[in-house]
Image (cartoon, rainbow, N blue to C red; front, side):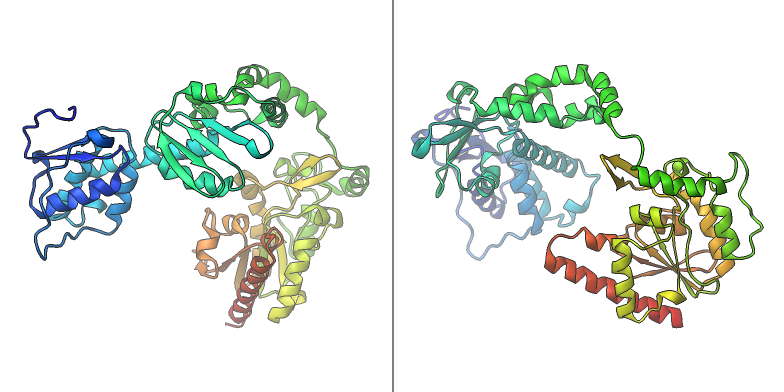
Length: 489
């Protein structure tokens, strides 16, 4: 309906813009408190001096509108959707909430499903804006300015402008879209009218450099075309400088992947091979089953030297079996040996092992009295030049090596197991569990074995912030003190 046309409904509400949530909220409150039903309201948008006055009643004296607190957040997000019926829809939800306060929790309700769909679409559009806005430089020196053109599906410019202010605070930039623009001059953010693509500048000198960078970081071995197009729909390609490369990169992906694999190192450094050669004569011929008659850990360790239960033995230097007394009360189970453990043939002797030893000592746990092993006995890695980079074992490799872990437990018969990380927990419990959520808890298996859950000490090494690292060390120390108490129980 155009301004000035006759409206046959009881109340007409005129909002200043498609994103005038404050105006909608005020009008909705007034109307709801005066018992105006959703079907008796018409909602419109008109900017500037042509906008008629809304037909809104006053708020009755002493009246209060009570709705769930989180409704405002849901409504504010859905308000950015491009559905022209969203104003009436959100008022209908508000009307229902007055008598159905638990409505937002009813996932099967058609209105709630529609609300969730609208919110999801707005959030996804915001994510695309964050990912696919590309600035182009105009001017130099004091006149330097960056301009981007973007075509969102919904009214999200105002909602996302602060994101770009935080990310590009030191730049003078403008984002143009068909319905609104956002301009930041380094001090003040201004929202203005929409634009057309011709208002944005053409290609700048930096785009050739960006295309070169994109072409060189493109990994053909990990290409999944459907997944890529789902995350980066073709509608955005025309505004991305790197998009012109994508068809050719896809077409040549198979050939490029073969060439990339051919360039990769296929064997460890020579000194690794020398150590490996010392252990290969002890390995059993292919197909020979492992000795299941071991009566001691020493016999079991000797049998494990010829393990071929999974393919990891082919590239690893040697089997890294557990260490500790046969009668240990507790078994610590890690993930797998690392580079230094693979070369030394002993568990927990690398950087993570040194962190582990130090914290055990602080907790009063004597490592000489505990048994330490791994869920997987061979080092799984990816070659990177002269380095071997740890690669997480998969579920099949964990299951294959469970054969050895079960026999370690059968011979030692501990009263407590400590799972150091998710892979160890998977091996001990037979299922994946969220370690960070149940850390510090004891889970009892069907056979009565108590399993204490905590992190792997290598997690501490990956924390860069010093304060965070020290806090995590304290948490791990508390875990080890709890283990000490459980050992005595």
